[in-house]
Image (cartoon, rainbow, N blue to C red; front, side, top):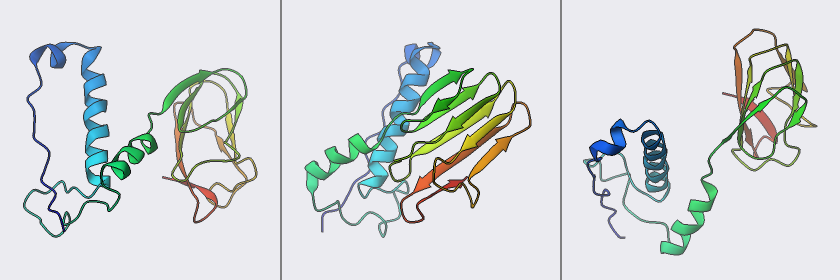
Length: 157
């Protein structure tokens, strides 16, 4: 069993922390690397040795295949009916129906936010917490959902 050591911590240059364009990019990159670290056997507790006792048996190939599993969520503003493709954040600026992906990946995420008129979220043949669709009636409210293969359904989180 190989021990997994915590990754080295780097100090962010001042340019990154003060630049409004670079800071969010690097914060997201740090999040991505942390997710990659924990998914490959790393622990967020450098004292706890029980969690991080072994790296995945696929070694580096397994590590690189997991990188492709981590995806950024696109932000889509829309005033017309829309169907999701992958993990997305949909900002609805008018009364619309958002139809969820009919072939979602495991743990695919969708956030639907109502900014304009009433919004209907259609499960597209899959249930959303036991319902075929959900209506967002309250302005500036969002619905966060995740698809799980085990349940073959969308789950409100």
